[in-house]
Image (cartoon, rainbow, N blue to C red; front, side, top):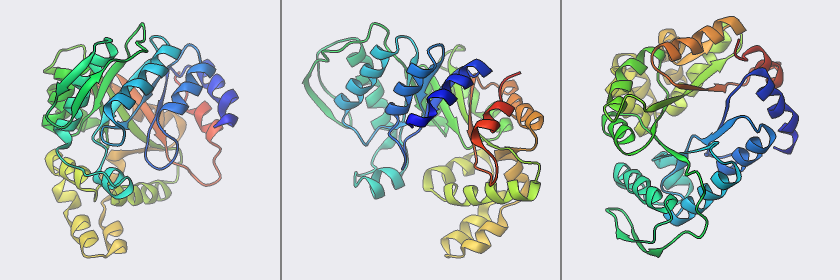
Length: 306
């Protein structure tokens, strides 16, 4: 991460406005935000996402307040359920009642960021006498990662907006109204997958591998069933469940790979991102898939806003 200082500073000059971190098996979500916020002082930074399960509520509040205090008005806290893989298999924490856990954490964080002493029993945890000593002058926005109807409505009702993932530009039109039930000014952030190559077969191959790995995870499988993609993915799900990984990979249709992954030359990739914006995305968070022989920094220059 220390080697990214000049790169992050250059991306700010290229016109990028936000830097978003994630948290799965690489870095934690907060450290990259702190560094990027220092290296690119005009840009906003945010977590997309911090799991609601893997830290205690007070620890989430203290960590987020620290970053918000260091980067006034430029830090966004994105939280979400994460998945049973990360929460239960990797962290040995029971993945129970994820909707309520996320809702309760949002409610707790609002109180904590306001500096209140909290002694309250929530549905999924109890807080006894916590009062934060560090209260940032500008409380961070809280965003909720959401997939299906219930969580989307929760994001719109109780937070500043939703963080979306694993959906096509067309799917945004189905998802956005649930968030906007909570108000027309709610922010919609989407993690958008980009493969910067003209080689369609290479791009589709990379996309299909990721689709098999992720859309067989129960939360994402349920999301795509809800979106109406069962006809495109049922064979993949059946073969994956039967242990036929090669068959599952081969069964993913090109159409779905093209919908979920933007690929092509720089102009085509920028046009693909624009389709998400046209469908209602407020903040596109570009996630570039590595392509052999391509330099990430050069890709960042090619994909820069025009």
